[in-house]
Picture 1 (cartoon, rainbow, N blue to C red):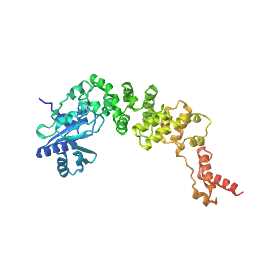
Picture 2: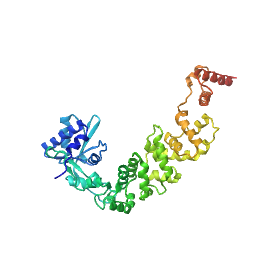
Picture 3: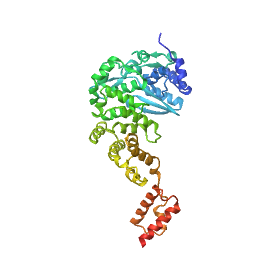
Picture 4: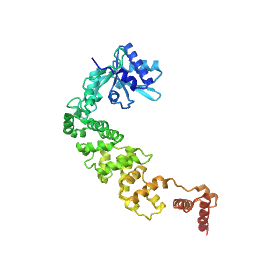
Length: 417
C-alpha cells in the first residue's frame, strides 16, 4: 500500500499554503488533471528541514490549471507559455506550476530538448533519487507518496544517488550539485555514483561558464561552503574550475572567521575572494574568464590580489589614520574585507579593520560652499583645503566645525599673504 503523508504534510506546511494546495488539487480534479508536489520539498518534509520552494507538476496543462486557480484565489499570475510553466504569487510565498515533461540531450552539456510527458518522465529527468519523489495532491489520493526511484530508501541510508549512468554526462552541473547536497545534508555519495562522478569530471568542460558559476554561487551560499569546496578538491572537481585552486586549513579557518565578522558585505562574495586569494593575477584572470564573472565581482577579485600585494605598506605600526585612508580608499569593500581576514600581519589586518569600521565614514564638516562664504576664492585652493581638512579630521587634529573653520581661515589667509 503506498505511503500516505497527508498528516505529515499538514504539520509541515503553513495552514494558508496547505489550504491553497488542497484547493489546487480539487481544481485539477475538475479539469481531469493530476497534480503533484515534487522535488526538494518532499525530500525536506522527510528530513524535517524548512523549505518553501513549492514546485507543483501537472499531468495535463499547467497553464490552464494556473489560470483557473489564479482567478479563484486572487493570485498574481505569471505565465511562460513557451515552457509550459506558471507562477502564482501570494503575499510571502509563491507556487510554481509546470507541465510534466520529458527531456533528451542532443549532446553532453547541451540544454535539454523538452516535450510534454507524464509524471514518470518528469521524475527520471531529475538529478538525484532523493529529489525525484512526489506527493499526489488530488483529493482522493491527497498525500500519497510516489517514489519510483527509491528516494526514501536513499534518504534513510543517507545517500546521494543519480538516476541513470549517463546523468553526469548529460549535465555535468549535477557533479557540483551532488557535492553540495552531500555536504549540506551530511550524506555520502552512493558508491557507483561517486565512481561515475570521478569518471565524468572532465564533462565539466562541456558546461558554459555561466552555468558553472551559478552552481559555485549556490555552494558559496551554503552555511559552511568550505566543506563542499574541500570535497570538490578531493574528487578532482575543483581543479576543473581553475587548475590552481586549492583548499587547505588556512582557507577553512578564513571562511569560519568570515562568518564571525559583522559585515554588510554578502558572505558569498567574501568567500569567493578568499577562494582566489592564493592565485596569481594570471590564474585569477583565467578563472574570471572561464566562469564569466560579472563586472562587479571580477573587480573585487582583481582588487583582492592587488591589495594583497600592497599589504606590506599597511604593516607599519607608525601609520597615521590619514595614511591608512590614502592607501585604502580606492579599493572595494569586499577586497578589503577579504584581506583583513587573510592577512598574516596583525598590524595590517588591524589597519584594514580600522578603515572599514571607522575611517571610511569620516568626512570634513565644511563643504566647498562654506569655504567660499568664508572668503576663500573659487579655484584649486578650495579642493586643497578640503583635502587638508579631511586629513586633519582623520588624524584627530580637528574635532568640531569651529576647529575646521579656524584651520580653513588660517590656510586661506596664508594664501592671500
